[in-house]
Length: 166
Image 1 (cartoon, rainbow, N blue to C red):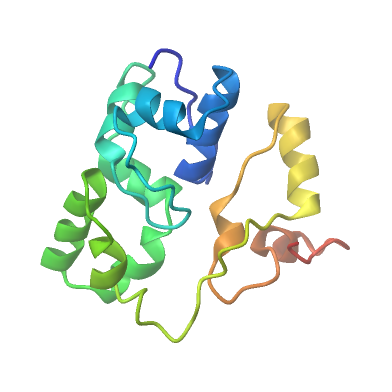
Image 2: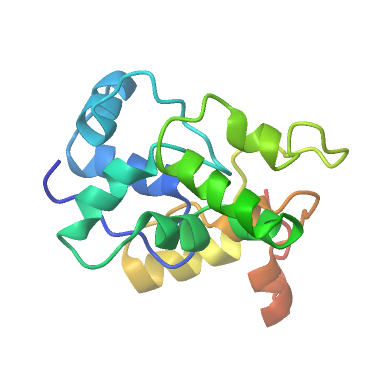
């Protein structure tokens, strides 16, 4: 896919792929999967996506975006990495680069966790305004999806009025 968008600061991979679809006028989710991943069976995942090697290839033309860079800067993996061994961490990165069939969530304990991930797409009105001013468009920030956190950390740090994520 030509002209794949570069991810914004802390933008989820899910969001970057969605922006690619918008930029290219692709309205069919299956066609988007074909274009981006060359695979119609990829499952869209907010927190710990897989099939990241094709994305790294698309972004290679724009700069040095490695799979590991995408994982640490544009997924929720950094929340879990400190709590696993080095060999386990390397194995999860390998799974996220390719096809894992749900093994990433299982191996990091997300599937068995008592802290449930909220499956809703959430946002922060204050951050949306800032994104629109800075980038001219909006995207899904990963800090809006921290498990168990219902207040945007960016707004908390800025002590703004609109601190609730929706």
